[in-house]
Image (cartoon, rainbow over all chains, first blue to last red; front, side):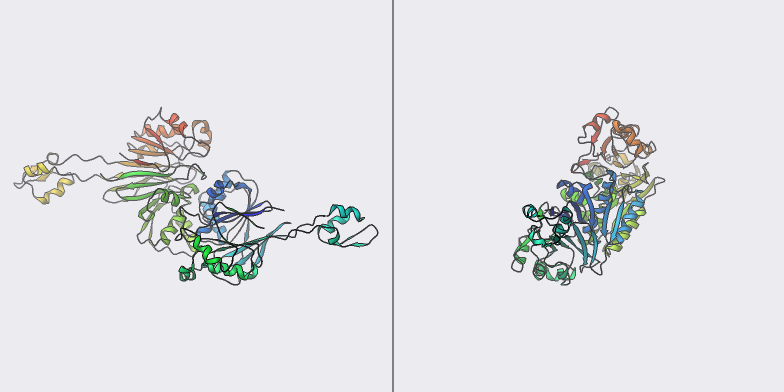
Length: 305
Length: 305
């Protein structure tokens, strides 16, 4: 199976603190290094976690609040200074390009590598990128400014042939590709051989969803239905429910409700307000509603299974 | 005497590393908290050094390379989120205002406190700010883009009266202000009393100069003449002299030469390239030319005496 795991680099909200960094995650999806959000200090967090900066192929920015993107320009410039040669793809709100261009203009920097922009659409769900193994789509969240969530989903795996059974049936090598794609094949006599009779069961297609920042928003549910791991912001606990509402953030209970209604397999909470030293309360509040809840810890890697 | 001391928050160049942060210093000048440059991560460095963010009254930005200002927007937003009420003065290149305005526009942030801009002039030395205790001026450096140095200088101190001698002379209280300003006074009979006969000697006016980034530039000398503490960038050692020239940076030897020719009292080197793990070589190279040389260490406070 491919690697499919996410390392949390920052799970604090709003202002950096000695306890937590602003939002950033590194998703390793089938060998692709996807950086999701890039708050101030992300470069240092990448180094601390021994993640090679130049291996990042894509950066996904959810929205233009500073705690989700202020580390990006420094990262782009570091990639430049280290002589990056490969293209970097930025999946982001269109306004971010203006912000990057203006700063590169005033520092008289001409980035030596190609930046490909793919602009997110805050109005509706869209597929933004794919290759033969992974597909990425965005969907609208509900925050104070345009914000999108991201869904990373494995494509159907090619099936493996059961070698013993392959010998029993007289099937030409050219039929193998059909079998790997899940189709039936023909034997040498022209008889149909059912795919299931000769292939091994495939692994299910795993998926990861990132929802930050948003208030409680039931439209999210359809986009993250049965996701294997749902990262959902929980800036506050219920004791600050009014503040959550006012600032378009979620409580742990609300995040758990979304996970439950979406039949997610596992929930990872993050984007904690600096007012909470310990994250114990987040577990206490979420688990009665959605048992399989974890709280994000910086430097921890969560396997998507 | 007033406080007059500088705490180095970042003394690395170009890219943040686990060893050093990008440029930032906190100068406490007679109770004013002046932040000089503000590389990425400065907020965290301020917190680590227990410096109260809201006490910063002025930020001075030397130039618009990322390692000198990318931490500023996050700092401004943190001051905003923490409900700052007092004005913040930004002394900076005019283009920085555009960068700040564009980002606040896209994050839909209306900063709750007043920001007063004072734009630096890269062409000639200028006084940019003063009060009754401190005067700040800028002067041109020579770098790849417009860059200014900063000179912070105490104003003449009010003289203290020698109380014993005051009793001997019959002088009215209204004459005291004249004496404190260094003028002679009149006694009750209308006779002149020489200032020196009745006042204590004053402390000299201390000064601090910040020169980063620049290549070897002799025009700097007149602006930092006899400064008490000169911070001068030394990105490289002589082994990288060609690279220093090409990138408009200085070597330790060049920084020491400026300090020597300016008859500075003390030299503090910083802005070290990440290629140098140890800073021992900087001392070895600078001290034969200028003996009173120190290398900057993050978290260390240097008293200006």
